[in-house]
Amino acid sequence: EVQLVESGGGLVQAGGSLRLSCAASGFTFDEYAIGWFRQAPGKEREGLSCISSSFGITSYADSVKGRFTMSRDNAKNTVYLQMNSLTPEDTAVYYCATPRSTRLGCRTLTYDYWGQGTQVTVSS
Image (cartoon, rainbow, N blue to C red):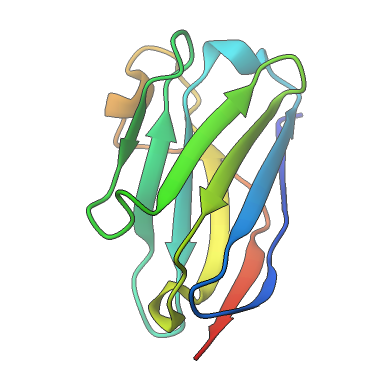
């Protein structure tokens, strides 16, 4: 059974930092791309970043580029999202996800497996 478990969320002041973790199990972790997403109340889910399987190549949405850094530790079956210079607009539930197929990597448009999410709240 594929499982993704996010952790590391919490309350932080504007300008602060958090590091989210996504622990994976139930699949061959190093063969799959992993994405980070967030959803704020009343807003659509937003894709933030993706890391490829083989070379750990990352891509970011413009809204977080330069502030967020994604990485993976294949030995620990874990991906991370380092979030710096946080603003109240970053307040949301943050999710990691992975596609069922390895074929497209971060070019995939479909993520099939999702974690339960972790709340990030940034106070002004």
